[in-house]
Length: 632
Ligand SMILES: [Zn+2]
Image 1 (cartoon, helix red, strand yellow):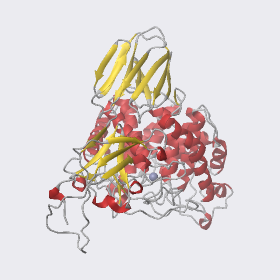
Image 2 (cartoon, helix red, strand yellow):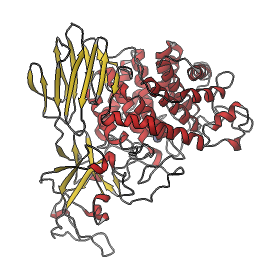
Image 3 (cartoon, helix red, strand yellow):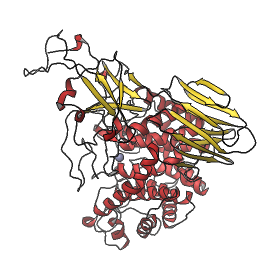
Image 4 (cartoon, protein in one colour):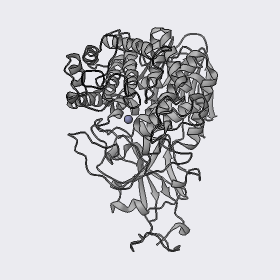
């Protein structure tokens, strides 16, 4: 199997990039854009910023501290791009991974150590700042890049460098080594994946050691508390994900990997429990996670402000990685449901239509349109109302690149009884003697046709996920038509080549209400259509600032219309939206008003497409029109 995450056991077995091919459609087009625009774009910026040059200087012993460029974690961006390129090659494309491989390998030191920030004359000593230095985090990404090479059948310099680094870590941080942790989890899942790719048990042992060591207050107390790096409570004892969202979710991925490979059902159950609580109380409608800018962190339960949402792109990628692991381990549709929501509403949103601009934060409301960004230089801040070409902290673009390049590996699975399709994308799926074609215009259209192109003689089961929102889905099989409910629609029969089944998911727009405990959006509604969350964007309205005072009438019908300005097949929505008169008297409070709002209407566009038409304001949650909520 070519792809990320290959557990040796579990309810479902993943099908890889060599077995699932995306051809056109929503995700196929994004995968092509990733290959043709985003990966070369990232390669350009790694050169432009000097982050790749650091490796060249390290190889020639010219890396004096004043010559090194970038933040302490910049090495990891080179590794993540190398991983993206490896998957791109693995799915049959081309990318200059050999070049990166050579540059990285040349910088490795005798003994396996590799980091351009530490250990040279004038630099801080190795492992002198595990709290903030990201040395083990960077190894994690190096090892994942190496695993991507090994899974594509290439044991090249990158793979060898990753193995040498992992061996070094096992000696340095093993049972008799430093009793220490990295401030940023990531290496845990990487070591388990390297164990899976090589069969070398000490990598799994080391990963388990890191997971068990976390939460023992090994790292220092800091202003944000040890919860920031999940060192406050042991993984097994935590109630919900907390602290820095990317760190928390990467750690959870590593914990699931360790649990699955060691048969540790209690550890797996602990992560599932934390996931449930996090989904129930700490997750945005888009699937985004992380509601605090302070510490880039999860908030308390129901602390989910729309305008101050942080929702780092990388946290959403980590959430999809975690969902996939939990899906493979359990076979439960709820994990694929959240993955779908996150893919369409954060991961698709994070990249501009040209593939060369990236969001770091993904809020659900933009109150002020920011400046038009200069696309020729990195943007210094995480937040902006436009996607930046690159950032001083640029973890997200390379993370998106590796995710899209390997997306075929997150679509379908197999077990002893048949094939399961979890995400709907136009393409082909092959498993053993079975070959399928998937034809769909999803998510714009709810019809998914699966055709059996090749099959053996023995009966087998085809399982199609029915998303949690699809309460009136229908399935047409050679035996007839039936209603199907959320979960998996399973068809078990003796298939013949040419058989077709057709799943129709109801993608009519629908109003969605928040739990009243989410105070920040109480009294508001949102609109969803199929898996897509919609938003109002100021560029569709004149005068532009009207979004602040808008109300919607959710008893009225929602009408659909094409929006070719945002792409072929894109559907925009119109809803009635009476507007309150602005207060305008220098004090934004007043007595309760019974004045009728002015009639109006509001155009909604898919959230993932906002900010592709210049700086704008935007909101997902829309206040419900009610005379008692109006004020003057
Ligand atoms: Zn990021």
